[in-house]
Amino acid sequence: MSGNGERQQGDGRTRDLSEHGAFVVAPICPPLGASVLLTIDLDGIPDQMGPLPVELEGEVLRVEQSPAATEACGFAIQY
Image (cartoon, rainbow, N blue to C red; front, side, top):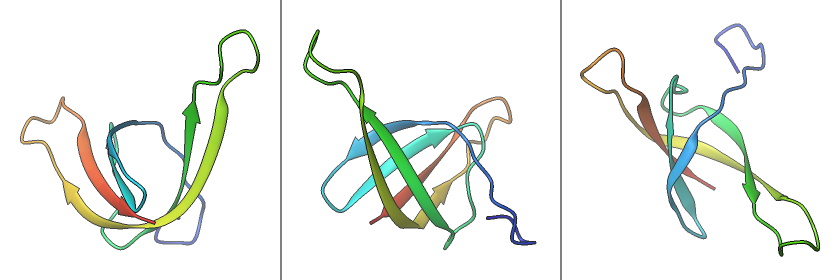
């Protein structure tokens, strides 16, 4: 959520994923300490089912800003 309580949404890619957390690379990162809902689309068994979405709630533990304004930032989430 933003500073005024509005929900925000964005897209990114997971760089690392474990049973307790993930590191996400995205064009815009949430602030440190933010609560996030992460939806990960896992590929299902080919020809039997489509993507399998997994939803996880967590907290942003670390944010890494890129020195170049044109590059994405990254953030670590613990769930």
